[in-house]
Length: 358
Image (tube, rainbow, N blue to C red):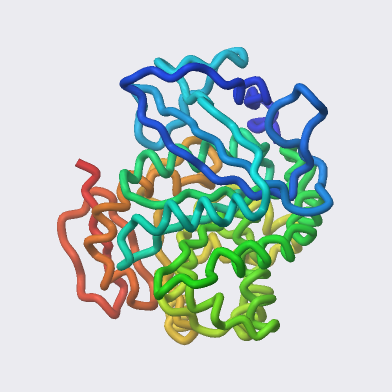
């Protein structure tokens, strides 16, 4: 709490539109959110709950000197596209425009992989933090795809843990509805569904609901990736008993030294969280194989803070090299990501996914 309280949070003024500079890289993000719209004249979306989904499209630039894995925040609410992330344009969309524009952009992309990526943020996150994180990951990955942010009304406060959990539950039906519409007439292509922290709980609950609704057609069009999911291990077992194995397998990034998940576990009665499982534990590896899940230990990656809860931000830049090991990462069981390793052990056992950042 002390660490979090010392951090200056980005405000709505960071979303003030500015003119572009020629050398800046731009990313267009589609937004679906259960956050309420702000009063007239204010920017972004609030931490209050909307009575339905709101839709928008943002065009954001990364500065020419952007450092991979980082967000260069505007200073004092004054975006400068030469030095910081900067919003260039914002447009409110109707539901029909939202889905039609995503479909149109995706139609020009390769059909042999996921061409739409949905990011669901975690606990203690305001709208601008979620938006710029999607921009960072999309910009660093340097791959074609249509980024979509599903933003739920987090209170953006360390003390708001319980309120955030309720807002996640409130947003579940809306995420299910959006995924159902995004996967219509996909012609074999997949939607990548990425959930971080408490957003991982929203993702798994939505998958469970889709299965109970008999919407296996939607599940068959999803590639699911969870990063440091804040999900009770026992609850996750019950969820997976309903969801069943996914194809391709669900991928979960874990690290045993995630301090945020340690705190969550203590708050929740000392029950382990899925995002902090030890892939070296034979029982964990056995369960992962039985449930057809890929657990990847990312402890070797550097996070942006002291909590070790956001190591996933570095994976965007490593994605092109990780994709070269697609067959390995789709094998179920436990894996260790060694960011600077030089050897690979045998697959189908505890292996090292080798990615040299250089």
